Length: 367
Ligand code: T4K
Image (tube, rainbow, N blue to C red; front, side, top):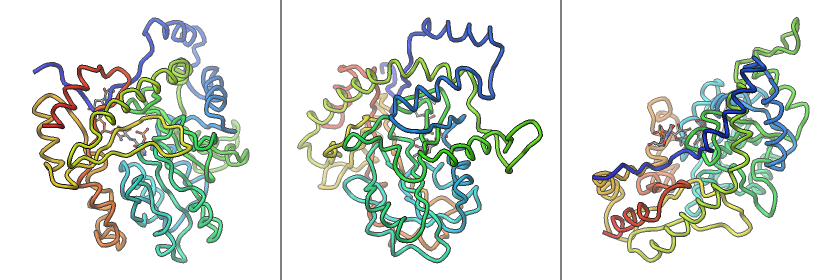
């Protein structure tokens, strides 16, 4: 067997291009706590994304946790079970109860039509996820949030650079969280950010990610430590120079999959949404809807041939021990999410996947 092909591989600039940044850090001896690169990256990122305020974080999970604190979310939070566990865990870590809402079959995002029935007097927020980079139906979710006086906090981990009708998707709602983990379209090894257009919220977030410290003698809140260090901020600055090229390469890989898999019995793919500039973060397929082989059989066939696809996001978060006893965790409440999780498979997708490697994957899928 040749070398294994993983579901993703990180985008990296040439190593030599990073050396001058490292030299500067060594020279400054300023390693973290809002250093020069942190400041530069924060403003360069806001400009790149087309948003008002960015607060950098050491990873997306801590950004989610801090974001909930900043918005003072309590009680029940309506969210999707079809996501990476970080979304649900952030709710739990804030002593809130996740209330799981079903998803839409065409985008796998939280179904706005099913939200209102889940609202109780304890509900204070909605936490939807733009899963795989597919934007949620924001206008409907915002209308519900406005009607019921709820916060709208998006887990936007997958939508780096995605725009709808020219508007950055990560600018929607009260707050959005981006992840810059190694497996993401844009990475800083580990990293993340909160995005808002409210300067007061940005200020509060910045206190909370630095222990609640306002100055040497003033601690305004029980904060955490979520600061991004200079290494990652410098790396992020460099990554901004290559990210557009990487997204263009991902798009080519996605289009090749689409062309090759269109009409293959038993395989359903998601399509680009009208008016959306996608980032091609993932390539999920649904397997076995109209006969053919099961998702697990295809996963095994690929695996035996050195292709490590992933069943993101199976099992559903609602089925993990911490959450499965919740009233909203039943299959009857989550029919689309349950079926999607059982049938979904994310194929390898990254900028440097070669045509030969992709052809091997396609041949194995076609059987
Ligand atoms: N919300 C959502 C919706 C998320 O998807 C995530 C993260 C978060 C919140 C939390 O954000 P962060 O706190 O992570 O910033 C991965 C990632 O660890 C996780 O960041 C990501 N979502 C999730 C969807 O995927 P695993 O357990 O699948 O990762 P792992 O280590 O199995 O990596 C997958 C493949 O990627 C490997 O088979 C090979 C490749 N890989 C991975 C790493 C880490 C590399 O080639 N190089 C690497 O350095 O969770």
